[in-house]
Image (cartoon, rainbow, N blue to C red; front, top):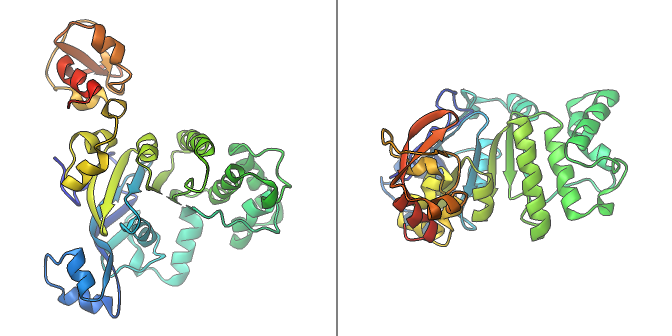
Length: 349
């Protein structure tokens, strides 16, 4: 079982793109002085009783290259504050944050601006489009701020317009677009600078359910093509399950658990996480890889490690084998208990 603040390396061969260690962000008068004298083990409520707010409370987490980390929690849990610390929109009160091995708190204002312009793209819930500028000019705006010449920024803007499916609307103004189209403009604008790291703070929450689903599909398509390192904030667990390589669940500024979606629902680290996930259909989240017993063997046709238990429902119901072999690509990695998988399928495990 994974504990609070435990870091899980999804892609261990890569140096983390983002590494935060024991990060605190406290709001109040002289927060640094308060943190230095704060008793060990002080709770969120203890800190609040002292007249301070722990926006981020002792968070240690890493994000690997090409990974999509989804941060979620209820309103006020600290998820947006943490992401603003990652980009140093907030200065942290304690701990360290490194981006590609560089301590961002040590950067000068000039170097920090350059880091954001060259490495980071940001998309927020409010589209933030300039109403007097066309789609093309909105998308080209960050390149204009970078000092890129008109010809090059127009060419790049047209590339990302095609990428997000807005061809033919280059000369529209924001008021002439639907909510989903406006969000695509926001995404395209952040992609125009070709960021290595992409921060998205509840980008789809203002959209109606149908458009939201379409935008999730579009986002997954873009990620499959571009392979960005992404930190995505949402309060919607279904959205997190669709998008995440890993999910970090926050409460009162702290990370309760950070793990893969199937680990989160099958092995909740805390009672809060268990309650957070108790209504989830586990069969649609849990993959055969989580149930595999390394070294175990089974007969007959193997199943894919990446298949969900829901995907395997017909096989599990009709099969009579006690152990079903599991493969990752062409490699046998063990076998899973059919009875265990059936319990997940019917919701008793």
